[in-house]
Amino acid sequence: MKTVLGCIRRADADFSLIEDGDRIVVGVSGGKDSLLLLCAMSLYRKFSKKQFELRAVTLDMGLRPFDLSGIAALCERLQVPYDVVQTHIAHIIFDVRKESNPCALCAKMRRGALYDAAIRLGCNKVALGHHRDDVIETLLLSLIFEGRLHTFHPNTYLSRKGVTAIRPMVYLPEKHAIHVAKSLQLPVVTNPCPADGHTKREEMKELLKTLSRTYPRLREYMLMALQNTAQYGLWDKKIVGKDDAES
Image (cartoon, rainbow, N blue to C red; front, side, top):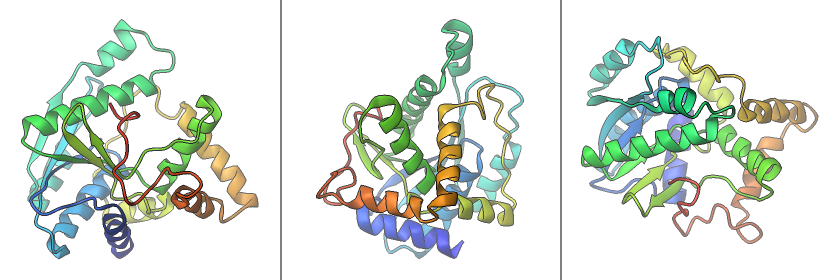
């Protein structure tokens, strides 16, 4: 956990993610990353000089089985208020629209529902559990399928919502997240989505694995390229990210 907290501290220092008085919703999907973020943020608020509040929110998309009792128990142990928001996202995606490639629309709807929940709860920021590999996979998806260099920013103000999305774990390698999540025995909920494991993001994950066998420092260098703002301007530490990919 020391490495996780170190990555969060570095991201906070680089991108001014957290300020005194923030009320932060941690989006908890039930996966290892969001649960690890919840635990790490709970610890971080104890050691940080900044005073901020935490809440946890899970979106129920209407898919079953979806047992959240383990997450509720974890939140109680961490003394973090926990809310479950009922949605009809799965019904809209799979029954009404019958999307053959549902992930992009689903992600947009989930983000919107999470931001709306944060607003209702009086919170000004939403913390998302994206790690370093998510950043790089998104960059590859954008390059290959959209023909542009783009990925999400660690600190993004949503002007149409009036809330800010932060990604405190953007410096954390996924392999380390997996290791810590297992060691903590986090109550991971099996993803009930029928598209899970059959997405373009999974293809990018496999592509990165293949390339990294030949170029072991590939992920490290790709992250460095993002930070080379003189050339790319994607991760400028002096500005808050644009919300075009968020809202």
